[in-house]
View 1 (cartoon, rainbow, N blue to C red):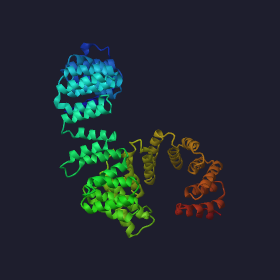
View 2 (view 1 turned 90 degrees about the vertical axis):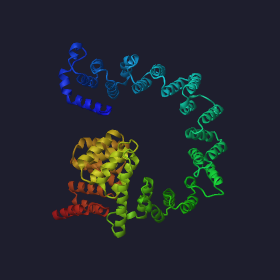
View 3 (view 1 turned 120 degrees about the vertical axis):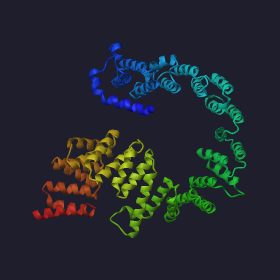
Amino acid sequence: MTLALLLFSLLSYVNLFASTFEISQPNSNTDTEELATFGSSTLFIMALSEVNQGNLNSADELFMQSFVSGSYNIDLLKIYVEVLVSAGYPEHVPALMAPFVEIGAIDYELGLDRIAIIYRYGTLEQALAELESLILLFPNNPELSLYKGGLLSELGMFEKVNEHYQLMLEMHPDSSEDIYLRMLKDLNVDRQGREDLFTKAINANPESELLQEYYISFLVSVDEIQKALKLANDNDDGLEEPIWFQQVIQQLLERNQLLTARDLIENQFKDKQITVKSGYYFIGIYAEMGDFEQAGEFALKLVSDYPSDEMAAALLGHIQLSVGDYEEAVATLEPLMNSENARLDWLWDLVEAKTTLFPDIFDFSKTNDNLSIQRESIRKLLSQASEMISPSDSRECLLVGVVSQSMGEFRKSIHPLEQATLNPNYSRQAYLSLSIAYQELNDSEMNIRVLETAAKQFSNDALILNALGYTYAELNQELPRAKKLVMTALEIDPNNPAYLDSLGWIYFQENEYTLAFDYLVRASNGLPEDPVILEHLGRCLIKMGKQEKAIPVLQRAIFAGGDSEVLNSIIDEIKGTQ
């Protein structure tokens, strides 16, 4: 059984027997002989239960009994520490583990966990002392010594840092790459000192690509471009693709030195055909500089030189989209979707090109063979996107959900939107879009649940507060709370016609028709052609006994796009009573 499975099993037992423990579990005054009558597993489960109730002294006593009777099973200690941390008592761990450290019963991984907790909740000096104790237990482990160098650096003890790493180089020559990387991070040296350190590191590790990469980055950062270029060309000698030259370009781009990067590429390939990866950079540089004409011309040339390269085609499609050549973009990008290497950014470029090229694709009142074909192609692309996105990529989940809704695929939009709510950067829009989905699916219970969750997270967001208040008003439920929610929204945005309409509709549901009329008129003045507001105003006029005035208002609602069947039925009913 793995550690994770063991923990799961034990925690399951805690839940199963929780009610029993409330009655019969021993407390901190339980006699040791009485504890001895329990088995190791039972004692351990009792200890976990005590942790969950905050009784740490009792928990420790029970744990030590289980540890001893369980033949000193170190896995139990690991689980116990994990439970303490997850229960919110990490500061309790160092003292608990101290006896195990003293007798050498603690292992390497658990020792690092203990130091990490001390580092977070104690002092750097305490963490350093604990680390030195752990090094005594594991003297041949260079990783621990590297951690020590980092702590010495944080304490500002730079002379000791240097001495420490020099000693490490003598003791662990096989780890010199890692040691030099930490020296570059931890030593407080000037520019020349850092360059000297890079020279020593690379001489000691001539095959280390990581050190070469960091050195190029350093040289570019101090404007030693030619020196970085020479180093790159030396490393690229004999390689078909100049990967180190691309490192120089990448570093320049990260520092927004676009002109320098462009000039280096032009000089590098002035007498020979540009390599495809350097070509990507070249296109990107011109696009970033806003010169889409030059970027497009070069992208066409790159596709011509490398007709089988999908990235070159994708870049060309992106440029075509950026300059408004939507038909060309579709023709370039669509074949890429059949590739095993299809990427989400290519797919979204294609979706954008198609939906711009066919603006009626989301207007389902319009239909013809071509629109049907394009709608089906977008649905296929959305299915493809759903398979490609990671649940942790909240932006992509939100995008799939929103576009799915635009296609009328409300049920399919729910899962990606739920994933997007997990990221604070996208949760607001995701909640609002989820609300729309549940409205369209006539699932008022889930709509309320989504909006209630959103209102807790965004308690000062007028749009969300109004949406929740209006939803309750539509259901004729929780009207006092609905009124409070909408009034709060109006305090934030006093003249918003949608919020005024919501409050008017709440008063309507409360049979306060005069108050409702005042707010609905103000809402209608703000949005004179909104069919929902006009319908509300017409219904209010009917309740106020002004049926003749209601008819033209309801007719305006129909012309504005309201539900003609429902509104005509109301009008016919009025005329029938006259």
